[in-house]
Structures are given as structure tokens and as C-alpha cells.
Amino acid sequence: MFKNINLEKTYQFLLISLAFLMPMTVAGANTVIVIICFLWLFSGDYKAKYKQIIESKMLIASIIFFGLHVLGLIWTENIIWGLEITHKMWYFLLLFPVLHSIVNKDYVKYYIIAFLIAISITEIISYLVWFQIIEQFKNAFLADPTPFMSHISYNVILAFSIYLVCHELIFNKDISQKFFLWYGFLSIAMIINMFITQGRAGQVMFFAVLAILIFQFFDTKKLKALILILVIIPSVFITAYIVSPTFKDRSDGTILSITNLEQYNMSSVGHRIVFAKNSWKLIKKNPFIGVGTGDFPDEYKKINQINTPSHPNVTNPHNMYTLVWSQLGLVGLLSMLSIMYYQVKLSFLESNKFYRDVGFALPILFLIIMFSDSYLLGHYTTLMYIFFSSFLYKRFD
Image (tube, rainbow, N blue to C red; front, side):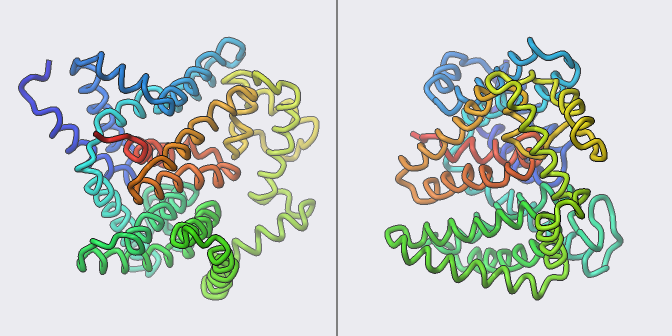
């Protein structure tokens, strides 16, 4: 059907475009995704595509995870919401296998550069708003300058970008002077930007990034790495606490909410603790197969009205683990975790340091932040996870 176009070059152009648009626009990224999937579905060579998917346990685990959402529709009563959740998970059925099959090792550096250019543009706009050079717009406010998405997603993507840039600075011995200077400036700008915005999960992820980078640098000297982590992370935290009023306020708010839960139970942290408690009651009633893909909002509302009627009803407990466990039971939770398990396993088998290190860091960082929100449900963070997973774990010929 597409004999008159060079599919390989077209795919790579689209992937670079997707990497650039991914952190800035939902509509733009989705348009590219639709074109990629359309070309892939109607370009033939289905036996080779099927073989590539069936030979990857990671991709099979991803498809099974989506399939459980479809299966969970059988025992759900709220089929409309169930279809909405299933729709959000379609990346695990189609996009992940599609991207995995078309990524090209020779273009990986261009994917990453395009992604980092987009992050650089986002940061420039963030600083322009923060310095009041341009007016506040969209999601970018003076107190929280995150232009194209909320701080919940922005700081997570920023933290992962910091990891990529710092990994290149530390480990890439062949990096050119031009890129070394750009990455050096970019890393400093991103770290400062991390603490003038309000995403606490991303800030936690940043400290995890520091720990991972230190361990990866002192690969054979674990004790030395641990000592440095115990020195560097508190030092960076204290410095950020002193220098950044935003970080200080968010840190103080978190501590107050945890230590005085009854008084601050209506804070965002207080809400999350209540969500977790109520969700656990829901899980205990249906531990193995859950309440079904669409019934979390209705079932949570019943428990909330009895135990915590002053708190809002929610469609999402802001915790990926409790959401999946509530909906699909222990089977669903293990299915989701199996994707990360295969990713970590594949990273250990990789001889290339970049793929080994970044391939290990990606699932570990997501395993950490998914305690504070459903980061495989939101567009920006899910797409970043799927996009980078598509080439980090591919065994290129």
C-alpha cells in the first residue's frame, strides 16, 4: 500500500517529531502517533511484526496488562468509565509494540536530542514567566511556571531529563565540546527549574536520580556510593530548602500534613493518605480480581461516604498501585509489575552502558513515583515511559 514512500525514513522522521512534540502538545503528539500507527498497520510484513512481538516477554506482558483491562469490563457495572480507563491504556496494546518495532539504533541519539530541545524550549518559557518577562499563560503561573502541563507531570519529565543530561556529562567520553557545554548549562538550568516549580513527586524523583547516578558511577564501590549519597542528597535538599521559597513551602506543607494529619487532612498529602486508606479497604474486599475496570469511582464513593464523608469522592486514588489493584486485583498488579521486571532484567543483560544504565533507571524511577500518583494513566508521563521503553530494551541487530 505504501510502496512509493521510504517507510524507514518516514518512520524515523515521525519518531523524531514525536520526541520533540511529546513534552509540549497533546494534539501534536497524538497526530504523529495516529500517522505512525496507520502506516504500521497497513504496511504489510505482518509475520515479521508478529514474530518481533511474540519474541519479547516485555511486549507480551504489556499486551496482557491491557488485556486484563478489557477482561475487567466483564464484571464491571460502570461500563462507561471502564471503557474510558481501557482507552487510556491503549498505549500498552498497540503503541508500545509499534514503536518497539520501528525504532532504529542509528537514530536514538536524534530522538533524545529532539526531546531535550523540547525540554529546553519549555524551560525557557518557564523562566520567562518566572522572571515576569512574559505574561502568565496556560499552566504557567508565577508561583508555578509549568507551561504545557501541570507540575504533576512536568517535574517528573524534568527529573528524567536531568538524568539523561547528567548521564551524558558523566559517562559519555566521546561527547563533543559543544554538547558538553550545552548539556552542562542545561543540567544546571533544569535543576534550578526543578525547585521553582511545585511538583513534589518530580522532586523526589530528582533525589532518586542523584542516588542512581552515584551508584552507577561507583559501580564496584557500593559502600563509597552509599556514603556519598548520605552526604550529597541531604546537602542538596538543605540548599534547595534555604534558597527556594517554593521548595521550602512545599516541604513544610508535606511535613505538617503527615505529622498533623487530623489538622491538615484536607491538604493534597492528607487527601492522598485518605485515598490510600479507603482504597485499601476496597482492595481487601476484592483482593484477587478487583472490582472491575470501571467500578473504582462508585465503589470508592460507598466507602468514602461511610468512613470519610468530608473528603471528596475520586475517580483515581493518586497511586498507580492501589488503582490497578482495586480495579484488577492482585493479578492486575502483578501484570503491571511484570513489565518493569522484564525491563530491569533486560537492562542487566545489556553490554552498552547507556542502554544498561538508562534502561535500569526508567522503571525504578517510575516504581518510586507511582506511589504518589497514577503516572501510567496520564498522557505526558505514560507517553514518555512508552517512548523511551521502545528503544531502551530493543536488542538491535
